[in-house]
Image (cartoon, each protein chain N blue to C red):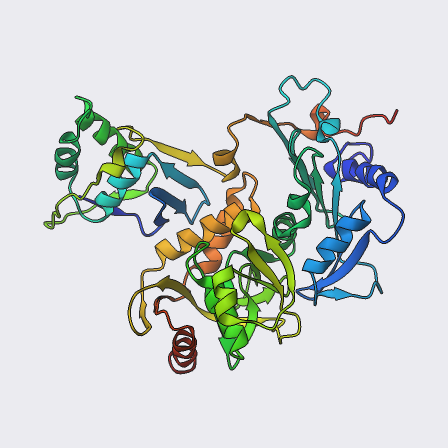
Length: 337
Length: 139
């Protein structure tokens, strides 16, 4: 291959120089340790770096070594990157080669990956809300891309366990997943995540955390009264609270023995039964894809599906008593898994 | 009669819309609102005849609905979402009025990414050797 051949990686090296010049004076980056990898998160704004660092509480480490991966986030008019002859600014442009991937929606964002240097890029158009940039979504999206390139997958699930035996709690938003997970965290369970986690692509399934914040709606916050500082109140999700749970003991990884599909019921007591896995796997893959975007790549769907096949799936019918639910799940994990 | 091709497909109904994922290829399928209801009925062992009978009772049902239903099933078989089975069980169709929220269309859409569902704009694939992406000269 000629060294002059243009590549996606070469393009992103030019992008690095460009965003380096945009950077504000001050601390615009931090490093986190996730899944035993050091990731440097770089911004051009000190304020954005500070806010996102707040979400990554408990995962941040001293900048002591060369990072394994770099995530770059910046704000710019993305039309700068349109092809010279682009006639339709509304279109989505994408390119892929053996060195990387790039996707550009000029009025919204540009997302890219440099496989050769393990670098990931998210450029936000200035007309789009800063909230999108500084809240979890963009970060989760980038972690999702990074995970696939590094032998892992990001999944939209919670994970809790007892005595080192974990279960993933998988459901779409609003079905009781986070509440059950946070209740378990407060009850002393092994804990990995309440909403999004990493799993290994190969070998016995294990779940790993991305961050040490948890989310609760206002009602459940009032009922559980967790002793956790509030990181963020999300006005777009009925004032859902993001809470700093870093003082609690998170597991760096937890073997997963089953997937539990929670369903809120009017029953006076919780119950559990084994169910056909297909609908739960479809929910999990679909909600994960919605969460992270998987960029026209059936391979990621296939990887997620293959990762899930063979894992037993149970449906837990939850009652209104949070303590009963938690103890019921605890007994199930200890006795049945 | 038909059943879900469980050797290859995960299937779920979310907010009234079918989600079908071929776990051997990663391909993702969606259907129209009525298509989602019909697909759910088919995998619940309801015969096409009983489905057609129920739908044709609805006001505004097109005269060629039988043919559209056959085309829909043929597409689901072609995509390997459904497989034929011998079954004597034939449940009654249960189709609520919500099924007609988007009319009587029976369509199967093949998506290779969820983003395509969200972005109606065209996606242009450009090879790097065709000259994009390339960093523009700085002014």
